[in-house]
Length: 131
Image 1 (tube, rainbow, N blue to C red):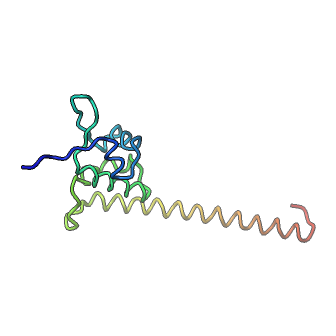
Image 2: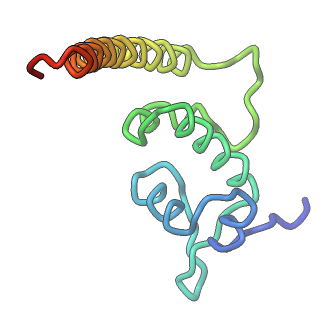
Image 3: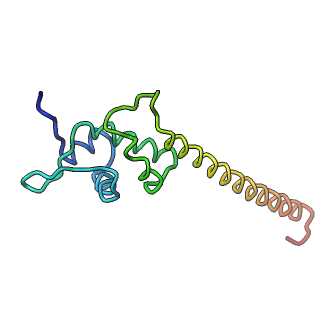
């Protein structure tokens, strides 16, 4: 068996594009596990690069760390086998899409209201009426 490559937090940050602060936050949130060297420094298995990448993808897709936490074990250190994707991750995406649809609808209503008010104000300005 070969030597397992271990990364410092700075190396993991460089390889993933995540900040050191974000990695510490992932660890404090229970999403990322670090081993401690004799000097007390965090050391991460090289598989953490892909794992952090999957966390960052979920974050970019609008998930919070709280939403990610229940499915973090499904993210695994290795890329997932597409035939065995966990139903919990699929359910997570369904829930997020429902939430996003509700937010989009609310924003569309706010936009319609603002557009109607703007049209009214512009009409009042044009005709010299009260605004």
